[in-house]
Length: 89
Image (cartoon, rainbow, N blue to C red; front, side, top):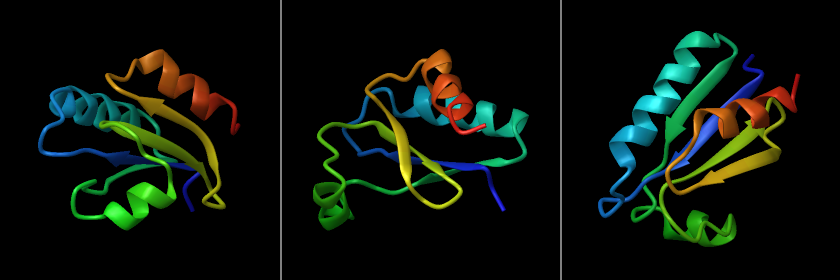
């Protein structure tokens, strides 16, 4: 069971997509109890609206119960993601 999941919502027009994907992959490679998944924003508009995703990239930080404990919007910073994850532990 994962401690946390990073759920990234990218889109085709998302310029920081590669940098965000690389950053999240790097973080999850260092933390075996944290997973990273991507959900295409354009293909999942209902979910985007329901979760109030207003820009891409947005990454939700979910705890092991699936509850949102943080989110990062725009070009993510490593410290921002690590800080959100530290709130779970």
